[in-house]
Length: 351
Image (cartoon, helix red, strand yellow):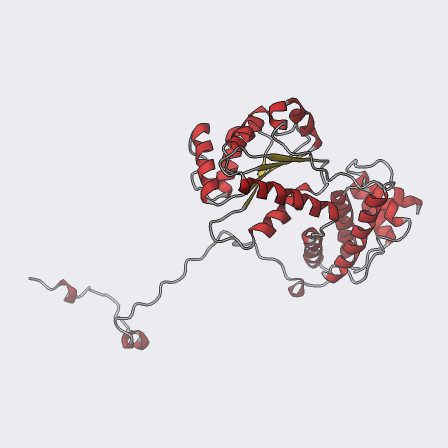
């Protein structure tokens, strides 16, 4: 029998053994880790490594500041009230396992804080959950308004790798099973209203919601814009299974309670901008006169206020400054609130 292991390969280069490897003969070296290249190239630029005064340096500073504003989350009393509503319907559902569930609605103007409220609630309740357990499932629903898209979103969020496969009937059955397996206690369906299109809560979705409630697995909270109100008012069968509508609308200056919330939010936001290192000193957002002007400029909507402040901070950092002035706010309202047609006149110009 020929020993092929000792055959010589003509003109082969001599093999040089690593002494360290030879000393550890018989011990398998650990395989080189597989690099995850999904985020390759997505490196956050460090302003310290860029030439001061260059556009790249300015962009790095602006990007960090704008992201800082976007990360700010400031709970206000009405949002905490919505959290309590979520808790109540969730706990009611735990007492009604196997029985038809209740649903709730929160339909308000864009920018009122619906999505932020839902995200913060889900984050809080899910924080201590075991692996694979999702007590609160928060999904975004597109404008297609199909039952299939609803089930696909839910299955995908619960980690089903085959969420796109199956008929509508099989997807619904798998969704109910996945909700049970994941220990889900509340589903929040958050409508993503894009391009001013009609509400995504059409007939297919409302029918699917009724089937989910009848399944006796979890209660459902529905979040959307005001366009959804007439759709649900026409579906008396579904409305009969819902709690009283929740509200998170505009903060009206003439209402003492709303005014208190608005001024408190301004003060907290002002301080947070400094605490987070975005600005060097407070702006004075809750100063007398400016507080009301900002309420008018932003229609009493928190989301519009955050857009205004984000724009003012961006312009300030672009100008290599670390403090926002009244003029910065005036310019921000002109370039964001007025140009986006939220308002037609800038009330800050009267200050």
